[in-house]
Image (cartoon, rainbow over all chains, first blue to last red; front, side):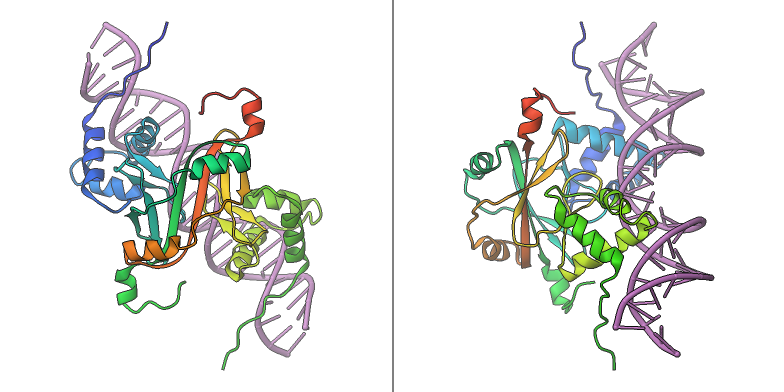
Length: 137
Length: 137
DNA sequence: TTATGTGCAAAACATTTGCAGGAGT
DNA sequence: ACTCCTGCAAATGTTTTGCACATAA
């Protein structure tokens, strides 16, 4: 008989988690790699990917499947939504009240067993619009 | 002086659009490539990518930035939301009523200039749950 | 001690791009 | 004619994986 294997709290994992907790942005795996490498210069990119994936499966962190080519990661697991700047690609948290029965309604309409939802807003952040951004590439 | 370049309606574009219109799923670029290749065996994958991108910029089709590793495409441009099966990866449309002022509220809270939003529900589709899917890999 | 984790490098994917030739207007 | 577009293949960028060694429990 096999019990659930434990996830060891290695130095690498601890530092990845710490660095991810420091920022309010939602860094890509490569950005996490850069942050962590300042403290652990010999860490491999593969390790960062493996651990981000693992931690998101455990629910320790959140893997964001938002727009753009790369996945992003978030240390805040409390339910919240996201807003992405179409100009600079930054992703911020947004805490917006949404009707509570939205999952139940979705289940009734779709005949899916609905486990959750995510809302992503898109727009131009105040940094970019103060720089006079009008059009989007 | 330069006027807006026109997008030619080539055979390739016409067939891509037709094939995309035939299905209610939201195929990946590679799936579109496979569908189109049955009618145009010599079409290149690059052409499919180029045209899907171009058509989504024009608003002819919709590029979905949903979960998973690949982007998906949708011929229905009317506003609608999506629901994704965590087991088989299928993405369906869902037409769910949402409070109308959600973008305005988001703008007030985030100080972004909000241009739109997307809601993605996640769950288990009825096909998968009828096959007795309990857990998710 | 031993299962689990790591660094490294190569592989696997998804997507984009350069270019020479082809096609629409 | 003159663009714009395509097929092809190579390049890019992201993520995953195999393996020998290292390390936490």
